[in-house]
Image 1 (cartoon, one colour):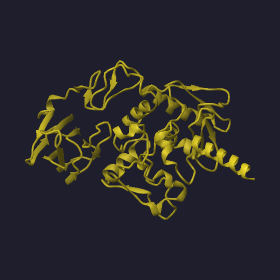
Image 2 (tube, helix red, strand yellow):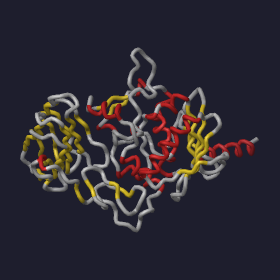
Image 3 (cartoon, helix red, strand yellow):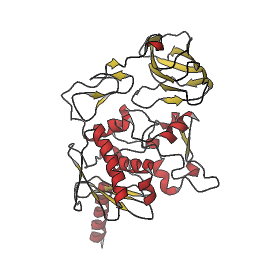
Length: 384
């Protein structure tokens, strides 16, 4: 009897170490950091297969998503006509629940089993495909608190795992900040309890600005692609010079992919601005509070504010933004250290709007189609 129990226990341990179910009631913290998906460890092609339960239309949605990833990264996908038994992804369809089984072994595939509603919902489909490839839900990051507040009592028990902080995620996440534009940011009502009206599972701390960005997000973010490359193809360009200013090598080692306003093969250059933008591109801040006003501009302009001491940070605020016509103006502010992460977007009148001092530089991008729009900002170098 003892021997039987021992064998059963060993088998159970092996199962836990090799497979994690997205729909399980508990998460294994060590798995996400200490274990690596076998899908593309050596940057080889990722095989995928469609079960007969998946409609042809759904297959096209999946393949379009995989194609987009392939164009922006070193990941390559290969469709199989026969069932996969080893490393790869199998897509299924069912009418009950969305379920993903991640395989960390080399003897079984990752299984993505989704409902019709998930296949036709592009946001959910991206989320589950990203998860199958090793991306973690963004709201499980431990640095989420500056941006969102999670309502634990409003979340269904089976969805808690999508919101519980994950203290042990892959090392590559340490080099990128929380990204509000990531495909791994679930929408507000994902997994929330029923009600009239249905309550949100979380709220942003910069409402309504982050709210609109999350609702409007329709693609994988710059950092999503960067993370995928780092997860499985980090050595692809190891003999090349590292990309500057948070850029990364996309699907070629000949040129970096850069985040605006950085440009060039190595992301060390800047996009040329229209002359109408006026003011210097870079402004050096000091301990004195300063203001500047931007008006009579109807172009896309950007400005970089840096601290005089790299160990200090920039305290930034919008003293006034006046938008004369709806949709005629947008300001994108990248105020955190990782400029690859999406900044905060503001599209309507605001006054005395302050952001936390989180890095030694701030990039302000100003989009305006009406010269009567007006922006007044404040900035200061601070020690904290």
